[in-house]
Image (tube, rainbow, N blue to C red):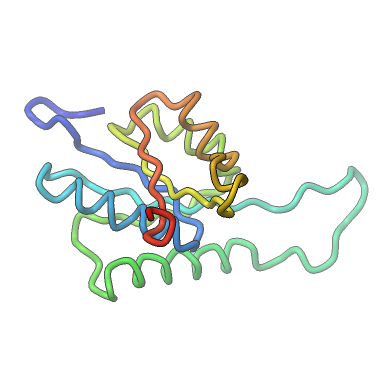
Length: 149
């Protein structure tokens, strides 16, 4: 939550490597800079669910790949020059539930919208719609530049 005298201290951004999440990172930074806020660039990962007693082959590497995606997204968002107020975190958990939980300690959550255009593009994705409905702070859903027209 915000500290005394600072209306926004922590802006959480859900990062999945998509263009929409990169646009969300950039927008969060534009908001954070004049406010003196930190931008928490959070990427979430988990192992796929498997049936009890069934061991799935080839499930290793999820955490490492998620870390690579997060690093690449942050580099891309800021042209390789990550601002000092941006903190990247890799968190094990499902994005929807984890971002709702993160919203308890955030002043704002920023996520990208991954619509498909046309009628389907009018709908929010499952993560962004869950956040809009259940977050404990304001939520900003960012469109990619080509969606804004």
